[in-house]
Length: 323
Figure 1 (tube, rainbow, N blue to C red):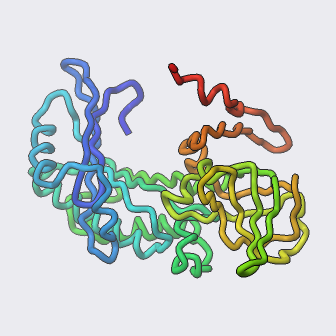
Figure 2: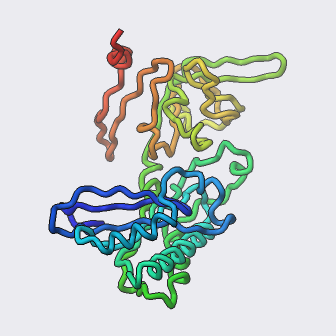
Figure 3: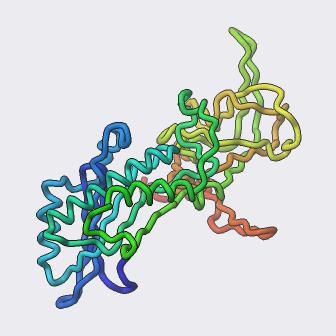
């Protein structure tokens, strides 16, 4: 939001709390600085969990902080940023959060003696088309409604914000609005490939089938962090219909259940499975649990592919050990 090369001071946060960091500025120069406020919102639009997100400066600290920033010659306060709770597919919830954000902006304008933002920035990331978030939770899994397009979220955000700012000193036609779709742009670009190592079938006390893979839930960590259930395809048998259910499990010593009760065709060792929609942070959060080396990353464009991060080796995993 600041001009290229200019030092910027930031404040960022979530519901009822804000967090600020400020970089050094050149003496005598004014650094454009967006401050970030997050809406207080209602319990229905901003669930309790959003209040538990650690980021933030409380309102009682933010208000005097803004007054100090406005009085400082080194800082030019140009805008407000909010980080919304993205764990909802409902445009109505996003509209409610935007409306609450607009109310927060009005409060800041009033508290800071008529200051008016030139920029408003809404972050948090919109759901992707295959959004796996929470899909391992039964009440979420039964929601089969298609994910709304990004344009629908834009309408909801702009509508709620415009309603809240109507009649205020903020002239929406003269204010830059930035929306950060994030995972809506790249989550569906990621595919995690794995190979079947073994198929194990139990008959007692009742039938149960495991398809053991050469990967791990530790390479798809949002299975735990956000209760994700990633869509899957048996790439080597993509045209074959499902014939039954099996648990797709990984190679670590834990339960390592990647997908429980996954519909599958008949599979065998060396079949290739593709987990879809893994482009949002699965590579970045992969761990070396059980000293498992992390897989390679391949960049694909059209019919061209190249390795952009090589696979780890066991030697890589233990290289940092001093004894």
